Amino acid sequence: MSEVSLHARSGRTPGSRESRRIRRQGLVPAVVYGPEVDPVPLVVDAHDLHTVLHTDAGANAIIHLEIEGGDTMTTMARAIEKHPFRNEYRHVDFITVDLSQKVHAEVAIHFEGTPAGVEEGGVFSPQRTSVRVEVLPTEIPSFIELDISSIEIGGSLRIEDLPAIEGVAYLEDPNAVVMSVTVPAAEIEEPEPEEEGLEGELLAEGEEAAEGEEAEEAAESEGEEEAEEIGE
Image (cartoon, rainbow, N blue to C red; front, side):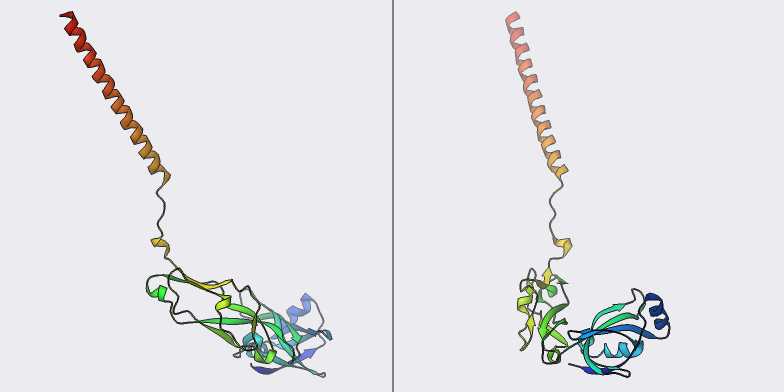
């Protein structure tokens, strides 16, 4: 687990107008709070924030928040708000943590290998790329590796199939699907259109009607021949 330091300045005035002014200066509005800490508005350097959030630990890095003129707080970044179009941070919450107490964290899942079903023409369908865990802050894994090479067409792996890691508890539904290998859509047989069945029924009815007409014509012909014989 990565432990990094980040300089912060307190005294920020809350409000959208002030936040816009701060962002134009290359800074990011922030706040730090915790079980025994009242919320404190802060500003941090945008470049420095990007750096601490892009270590191997990602958003789960332990951040020693060095507040100018104040104390250093052990925190983790939470509720990270980014611009919807530009690669920039708009706001971030820091929450204080006790390194001896477990926390909840979102950890990435790395799929290893190529499913056997894909080599046979199937389609790899990941259902999720991360999982929530409970673990000590210093023991949060950078990622969880999941071997998917043995999965055939129609097969899947679930949360319960994730590897057991000492000190890590999975918080998701054990039956939740993580990935699967499905049949290509082009190979799925589609039922025949109902029109074909209707045409078949109409054809059968037409054939029956034709046979009935032929029978009636034959009967009438026989009747006419008998009448001629009687007349003779």
